Length: 146
Image (tube, rainbow, N blue to C red; front, side, top):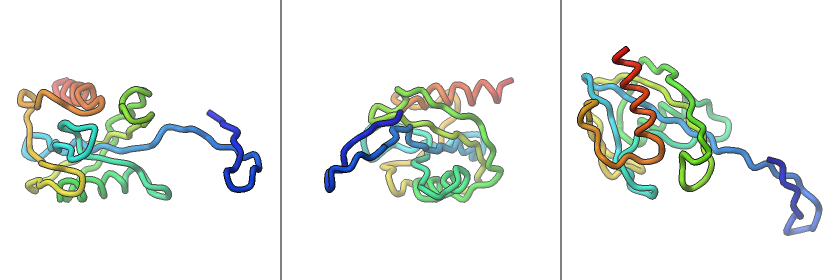
């Protein structure tokens, strides 16, 4: 969406684009369970680890960085899973996420924006998941069960 505004400093017309914010999430498999974080900041709830892609950063690099920052995990086998872009997926603003899968053999621990990090099986997921992560995980577990 293109928006024409006046510069608050000089009054010149400027063009601004209102686009979705790109994010990335990584479903990390550790010994047959997946890693979720309990978010320290709003919106609260358990979530797939991830975050915003920085300007000049690839989605893949952001995925590795966010996993390291939020869980301390080193990952391997990073693979594209899907893109989720419903404008209502994040209550704060329109985001789209590039979702990856990966593996790790490490034990996750909470870091950065995470209050907690834990491993969950398909039948052990917490009741309150943030964003559209219940939908993403439903798709993930369906894809694994063929």
